[in-house]
Image (tube, rainbow, N blue to C red; front, side):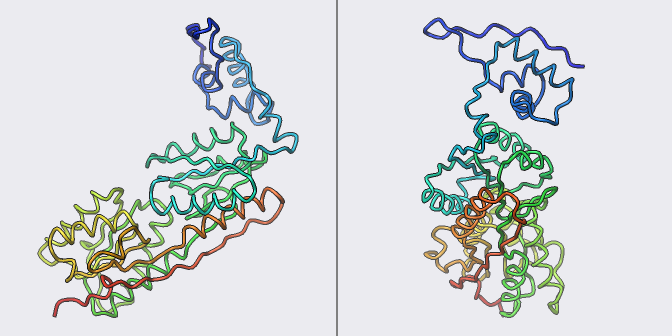
Length: 354
């Protein structure tokens, strides 16, 4: 059993009054999660007697007084007219476009949208989700990370509506809006093969993510069906930044037998590859197809051929799914696959050297 230490008295504010203690401070003192404190405060099931005692002692020591207004809303069937979005990086053009689509649908319903980034720290996912839940948002749209999402089961049972984008969750079922990642990648790599390429490199993102795995498998599908097999030296995975992509592509292109074509499996990776190609002055002799469109891809020379998703539509569909779930929490979960399309701009149509 954890022993609670005696907290220091809170500093007094300008008016001489001590600032109101927060649930986060109670959680820190009790040595439990923010969600555990929320469950104890709101008298929700699923918390052991020992943890209840620890939380109540911490609350008493801090003179914590919960704000019951928001807590009562969900139990009474009322809404807060807010939803949350949790993505790896809201500034990424793909996720920014999803956010825009969500906002369009939410605005029609007078609902405010709050977004949070994981900053490439997958361990933050549960913490951020619980923080949104404790603030009683009506629902969440989540792009699941590589971690398992079983922790959401209690949240969803307690009435939190969920929708998932870009990849399906693990450990729970829900409404999912995705793109045909594997088939789209296979078709794009097949295009490079049809132009005569055999040495086709794959530069992919975090391999633990389902989307990254689907795109890698799509690449393998095309290459294994081709007359020539791809050497392992042409596969680079777990790229997280544009700089890493540029470095990896530079190393590939300066090797003894460089690839004649690149498949870059994410927009930031594609941009890093463009930098490497231009720095080596081989952008007109090395083919490239990227997954996800990106700004200025169409004004480069040559323009970058991409597998273009429709993130704004994905966002709209996710928001519509979330509001439908709020209207009918008992409806069966469903998956919507949004088609993608290859936009040919020149880089993907470069033939291999004779």
